[in-house]
Image (cartoon, rainbow, N blue to C red; front, side, top):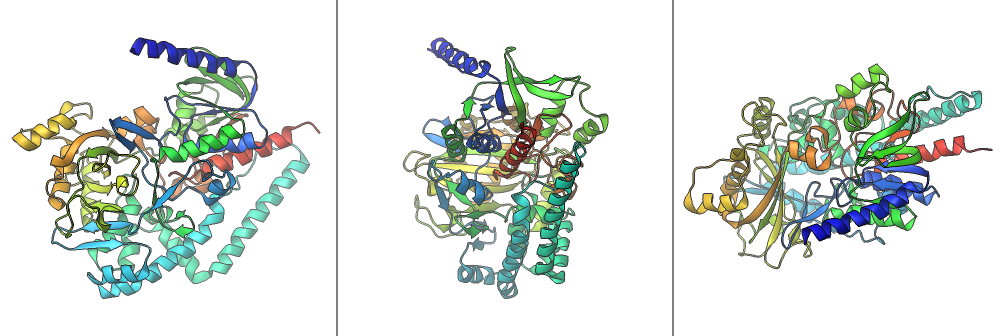
Length: 587
């Protein structure tokens, strides 16, 4: 059976490769992540011939749905939607292509060991009542805090949907140089007008927000530890930073920029899992004529060294796919350090790429459970979902000091002794991803360093299977793993959680790198520090999706405006490619 399936798969690949080989493509996209698919959709809509080459058996990159346990379908890496740009949803008509968003109300739940809890959502009256349990002053301040964030997000919006105004060094003609200067003047004029409309006071508050530690920002606004810690989780997600790290305020802002159906800051589940986002974009791209091939690994980009031009890709079997341009949805490190021949890039550029920060503190654990967790701080009916199960459940986040201690463990090369966990249960709203009465649980866990000071992530003592976990629970066997550490912490808030686990899948930073190509396990394709944003992303001088090699572009999260399931890098990169095609077209 397996051998027959293998032959059938090879037959499909051979046919797909015949299509790839038969012509020179206008554009080849390396990697079928959501940004690569987005770029392909826009390029194909504009009439270009486009091929997308994906190494894995399914498209989506980190935004995929996989059935890891029979009957349970997991958003294996990314797990929530909010950042996908409204322009991408609208222009690619993604709802017609199957995208269905499920709003989470309430959106946040933080249980406390003292028996209290904090629920937050989009309803101002509800939030006031919940926050008042901890601080009347904070309840009054919270709407003003949200209003300020709204102002900052409105200021940032135009920056997300346009390429940075990079200084171009490759323009030869006087007309081209003049046109470039005019475009940049228009860009900066609009930004200045925005700054003036924001006002000096708000502008200073905005700058302070960007450069400050999130802890400073939140301490200036609020008193209650549980509220500050709940909000601070957005400032450290996916990073090795503490809430006390300068610049973590921007990461907090980045995670409230999104929206669901026009409601700012609301994160949603996607029916069918996050793979449905990628599938909708893939359908839009294919409808426009894009050719998408899976199980197709690129070994190297083909370069005309004499002219420093990329003119296609070579697959692992030696097949050559020729194209006018190549867009890489891989990380900048993977693109420039592993897919290109040596000695074709400037040394200073390579040095900047090597020294970029790809550190990650993230582990993703996907669980199949036979019942909902019962939080001891809430009165609930067994097996029935309550408001506490709907949104993101913050475990180990009762104070910013708890978050900081967890981070310091990782800085010392240790998996956090009391990890910071964001738990979500999408099957509460999405009935398509688990058997009746059973549930899918996502744990987004911090902090876990890529390299351990003692031991290895490959050591079985750090990994325990679902069956071994049951033995641990029922027979009290002496075994310890990071996964068990996470489950034991959840047991403190929801007794009996461990015994509900049917099976699980754990992805440490090395696993995220191996499975999804995320260098260092970094979910953003590179750190989101202030030194790695806007005109400095991925590196200074190359922020406009172009690269030192003619014909090669980046379109992934390692470019502006950064990580998350946004689609903005893919959309922006496609527009730059189309501009360059237009300039090079014969007149």
